[in-house]
Length: 221
Image 1 (cartoon, one colour):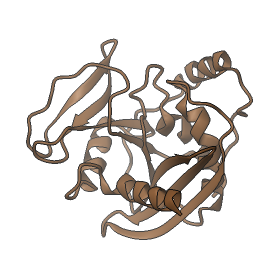
Image 2 (image 1 turned 90 degrees about the vertical axis):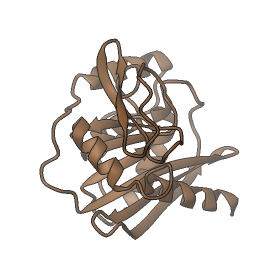
Image 3 (image 1 turned 45 degrees about the horizontal axis):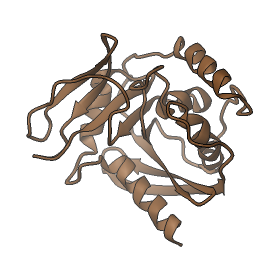
């Protein structure tokens, strides 16, 4: 799959923050039209000085696995809180270039709008791949919320500076919630509905859980 190279990655942290603030002005939290058919999930794992980017693609209705695409490459940028996308996107884009199937929506193991500058990896990546995106994170990066009740399917909204930025979703009875947020070109209702669709018997929705399992498998090889 081709992508649009909207910027390079040879930037200082100060320039990265400025770029995030600029891109945030173009986020579109709008309803996804129709129903998705083919969706992809992305996860990255790290091994010494290498990163492994995995993209799994699934049939939305059947919840069946269609394809697994991955790239392993050197890490070129250190971890800095709030700038994770600059560390992970170059590796992800190399995997995306290999992808032969065109998904309707892409889920990322990470944040979307639920980021201090509204520019988690799911949101940031959307400008390159020009696809609707959703972030599924196992922990909160920023914001405040009321704890949802303990039964699967219950949720509350995540807020930051009085702005709604995500959903705190209980995906399994009596288990800690996940933090899902629109990346771009979807709204909060889509984010909730599509994430719950992939919530089977595990805490993490299957679309990113499968990507994580494959990345861990490759990490151990």
